[in-house]
Image 1 (cartoon, rainbow, N blue to C red):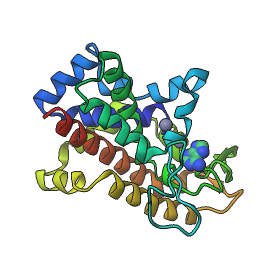
Image 2: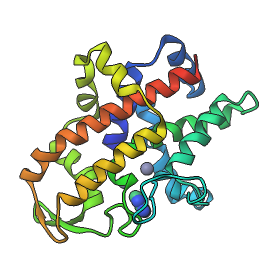
Image 3: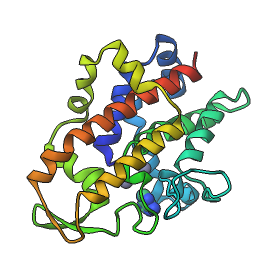
Length: 237
Ligand code: ADE
Ligand code: ZN
Ligand code: ZN
């Protein structure tokens, strides 16, 4: 996602943290919050010292492959391994305060990215980055439409995007939070297949596309936040 999507996910998660988890999060982030730190993972991309984290933002299965296996995972890291690494570092009693801060900021970001369907898309088109489309007349690509164009054009703030989940029942929350990181990756991958089928290369996209797919974007942001809260509540239980 772009900045607004990541912040929405962080803000949703804040609403579902236990008291204890919220305390720990504040402490580790020196008083900051999940929405504020959610964009850190992208902000460090321009710094050569952090180049190795580039492949951690997405996960591609090989063409025709439907199962994620350790053997075929990207040796440079991927989104699934990234989340595992962050969780392990936060649970590790030997992690320093700086390390905990770094991995918490990265975790918030990566759980957001896990819910952008095209971050679990195909490798050959770089998760839709190589699929050129027109967006309200301007040049864009499918990945960018999903990361940010729809969200930006809807002009909802991250807190407007976040506060819709108030209507969810306890049962609905439990249903969304169940499962593992790998389950959620497969769910995104399934959605990515639908997203790929939703356009043709060079297609002119605009309000019709936005009204069809923005509800899915919104749903994914909510799910990302609820699941991030689940992970953090478990870590800091
Ligand atoms: N960004 C850069 N490469 C990517 C890929 N293969 N999948 C998703 N997002 C990406
Ligand atoms: Zn992206
Ligand atoms: Zn990212």
